[in-house]
Image (cartoon, rainbow over all chains, first blue to last red):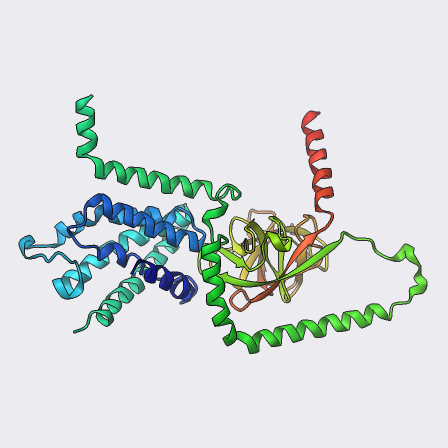
Length: 157
Length: 278
């Protein structure tokens, strides 16, 4: 899954052009779908490895790993905030296990945080604040869409 | 001591988090000093061979277009050749221009992007083919970028669509020159800076390389003037260039090796050192 996601990301999704500046990133699915029982330090290390792999392919050393490690760190927090009945949670934070509404809000929060960090770190300035915000927003919409779609395709009954 | 140890164990997740983030940031800030992290970019063996393999499959879909571009260039070179052949030799050797010597290394682009704020290109030629950092990359339709990092059989370059690098361009008609900078938004446009108001401009004017650096020879196509304005309170034009290279469809490029580069650099560093000594 690790290798599959990296290849999908760098060979196909990095070449998607939509109005020039939209680029969906679905490789964070790897971090999103780690079982909840995974130790937190392991999540961070996996997130770092994933980020650095994407970085090496897209010549953006450090940017993806920073953003991915960050969402790896806030993952338990986000899950705690959006889950109402914690005892019912399945160990696997997927679409089928927890329902569409839960999964959608989980993915949306994580993707938005990830993309915000990613794009602002990439341009490294707040000068074009709103044009960057536009990029964050549109790319996020596409990423969320792609991630949910991939879950529907891969894990249908 | 035991308290410190307990603190470390209790907070190991947070400390690991901090550690990984700091490592990432160090990478971010050091990537620009491009020689130091040579192996962590897409010219390294694993990443480049993945791109190379993928490209060897995908390139067949682009063959028709590539053929057309190469045929066009062929025709252009043929006409140039016949023009040069017909030039009277009676002019004598004193009229033959002895300009800087350049060698061209053909290469294929195996990875390219146009939608980031910092775009890079990966090429399938490396140090074993004689590629070195700071060589220019040019396509049949215009300049493309500059090589920044080289592995044994692959190399990585800044695309012109990268705000960290810009060539020096000049107006072919008047000879005025200034830096060309990508605006960061559209892959078909760039800006020409520092052209003063007294220069006569028209939409459609050709912009070529100035030849003031050892990266590109003089007179390579960059683009044409798309629109220009005179911002109030400033002394330079705001010029938008329509780039002649379509960065989404380039596949075959030439890497330009300036055979006099070392001599030039030696001379230039001599002058710089002399200036600081005074």
